[in-house]
Length: 388
View: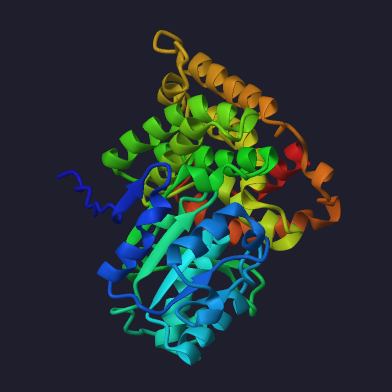
C-alpha cells in the first residue's frame, strides 16, 4: 500500500485592505481590548508620513502615555530588538503591540510578546525548552513595504547573539490579530527598496510553489501572487504614487507569505547568510540569487517552472519541459534587470574570502531541506561563485 500524504492546512488572520484603512486602527484596538499599546518600528520610519498617519489615528502623542514607542529595530533584527520592547511592555503595562514598518519591525514586534510574558527566556532555547506561549498580548501588523509578508506569518526571524545566525521562531500564537494593508502608507518607499522588497515576495511565491511539500491551496495562491507581482511591481517601481500597483503588491506580498507556510528552497538558504554575514538586505539577497537558483533546480527537474511561466504571461504550454524552463528563467532575469537588480554580490561588498562562511551557514539553513531538488555544500559553493 502506498504511503499516504498527511498535511495540515491553515490560513492566517483578519486583514483590512484599501487606501486609508489606517483609519480603522483605533476602533479595532478597542475591539481587541487594547488600551495601552506599544508601537514597534525602526528609527527611519518615525520621520515618515506613514508614522505620522499612525500617530494621528492613535489620537494621542506618545508623551500622553496612552501608547509607548520602541523605534530601535535593526534592518536584520537582533535579540536586543526583542528584549528591549518586551522590557518596555512590562515597565509600562502595555496590553498590545502595534508593529509598523518592514518585515524587521513586524518580526521584532511579534517576538517581543513572547518575552513580555516570559522575561529572561533564552531565545536559543525556543525549540528545546517548552513554554506556554498561549495568551500573548494582541498583535496588530501594519506593513509599509510589500515584500516579507511577515504581517500574516506565524514566524519571527531573529539573529541570535549566541550563534550570529538567523533563527526562525515559529508558533501559531505569533499570528497577528489584525493586519492593515493600506497602500497609502507605502508610497514613500524609494524605487530601489520597492524593487528589492517586491522581489522578496516574488521569490516567496516561486520557491513555495516549486518546493517539495504538498499543499495545493498554497500552490494556487503562489501562482496568483506571481501574476500580480509581474503586473504591479514594475508600475510601483516606476511610479511610487500608483496606489493600485502599491495595493496589489501589498496583497501579493501577503499571498507569498501565506504560500510559504508550504516552505521555501535554495534561494532563501543562500540569502539568509548574505544578511547575517554581509549585512545585505534580504530582498536584495533573494533577487541576486533567484536566477541562479532557478537554473540549478530546472537542470535537475525539467518542467519545474512551466506553470510559473504561465503565471508570468508566457505561452509555454506547448514547449518542451526544457524550453518552458528556459523561457521562464530568461523572463525572470529580464524582469529583474528592468528593476535594476541584475547586479552581482561583489557590487554590494561581498568578498570571496567570505565564501566558506556563507556556504557553511547555507548548508545549515533549513529552507533548502524542502527545495525542489537536493542541494549539497558544493552546490552552494558553485551557486555563490556564479553570482559573485
